[in-house]
Image 1 (cartoon, rainbow, N blue to C red):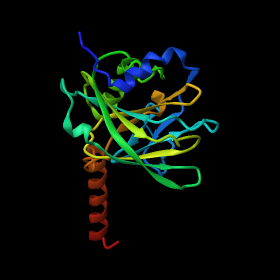
Image 2 (tube, rainbow, N blue to C red; image 1 turned 180 degrees about the vertical axis):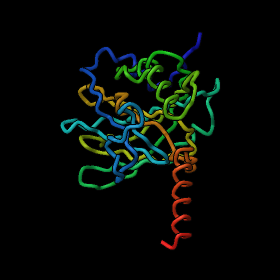
Image 3 (tube, one colour; image 1 turned 30 degrees about the vertical axis):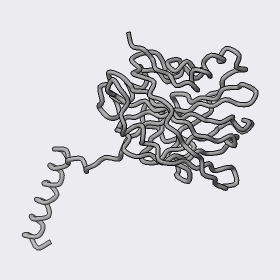
Image 4 (tube, rainbow, N blue to C red; image 1 turned 180 degrees about the horizontal axis):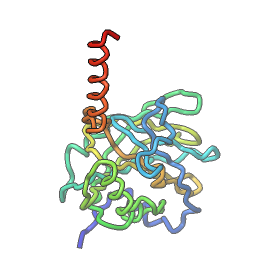
Length: 242
């Protein structure tokens, strides 16, 4: 049976989860501050899941949310990971910046906290022992990866990063630069307010790394036939002096 290796900070959170005031699924993953999809709304899969590439952001969608206590967690699910942590993934989060509602920015320190093991069922928040939205399940993630990127998923390696800020509140953005994250990687977030209200990400507004097509699709036979017919018609007209 798979043993979950949880970081000390996460374990401490899970021990007090029963005392939380409630849970709000308002931390949306977007494609980066300043992009058209920074607040989400650019779905990849069945009208759900937002695309990101080298940059992603966590957007606090709740207009009345208080500043969350430090740290805010960025949680990555990497498809078909090995049995131990990958150094590439642990170093994949390069830096982060907080942007408030006025557009003012401040640097946010980031720390790799833990490789929590391989998720082969359940949902990511339950896997980590946290109170969070249950829709980020192995079933939903693996179905999206198969549909969008053709990846047959056996497991998701779960990596946790700390974003060390206590100023992340209503309609703010945490902009995060990444490096070498594999195709199909999922991203969700987690935070706690001073009143013990928890904030998490629903599957509908999770993020998935999906790079743009690397080549132009080959023309279909019907298109080729149409192009050929137009060419023959043009040749006939030229011979007839039209």
